[in-house]
Image (cartoon, rainbow, N blue to C red; front, side, top):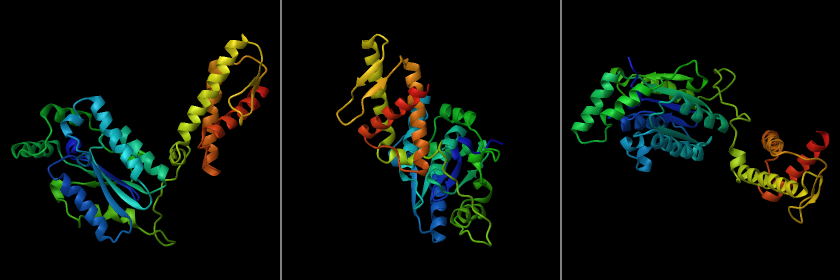
Amino acid sequence: MLSQSALKGWSELPAFYVEWGHQTPIKDMNSLCLAEALKESNVKQAIRIIDETSFHLNRNQSYANMPAEKNLRGVLRSEVDRSVSRDSIVIVDSLNSIKGYRYELWCLARGAGIRYCVLYCDVEETHCRKWNEERREKAEANYDDKIFEDLVRRFERPDIKNRWDVPLFELRPHEDGIETRSAVLGDAVLFLTKTVNSRSRDVKVLQPTIATQSNRFSEANSLYELDKATQEVVGAVVEAQAQAMGGPLNGISLGQELPTINISRSVGLPELQRLRRTFIKLTGQTSLSGPPPPSDAESAKRMFIDYLHRELETA
């Protein structure tokens, strides 16, 4: 059996954030039933569906080649990144058939510190093929045969051994149908809306880590400013060393409000770039438990210059 792979896919529900994957004749019914089941549970969070249709994307053009498919995933991922929060449930209605992409979406959920589960629509390939042909006969949106075969071939089934595929709820629409009272949908909704207390089983909430929590960086373009500022400092040092012919550097100025750069030895570009990367990483680590990284170029340059002085004095 090939789970409904490219055409029906599966859904991921990050707590207060939901992922639904497929593209089939009952696509709309799937996502709408899921949304309706959440509403019937009297969930307080806002519910939003994100899919290709929202961006007027044609399914055949979007999966015609790797660059187009990569662009599609990037568009959806960016929208999820902007939308995910503890105050909303986002239904991402797309294939999500590549495990690496599911991992990226899981990281977004983890970075937001929310619950997460996977609702997988398991349908045999023959049913997918039949649904696709029926859509073609009705002149409805469908996959070209070549693209259909390629998507089926590359489909990567969710696996409970992967942490980004659990908790895993499996739905079989061709056997059980799809309705708001479906037991599987009910289990998924319960997981997302369950209140944790001393008597109930703990609902796992993904915890942000240094690798996944990027929100604080992006809030005020901090990462961009940090990267740009440190590059300018490295460039100034490299240029000054070229003019000094390898001699000591004293009094390199990048602005009136910034400390001058004083380096007693020649420092190669590889070492400077290594120090720059380490500085950015350390700044990000500090921001998780302390104040956010600098959001303006002057502050970033000042911090990096101080870091260079400390590191190069002890090197």
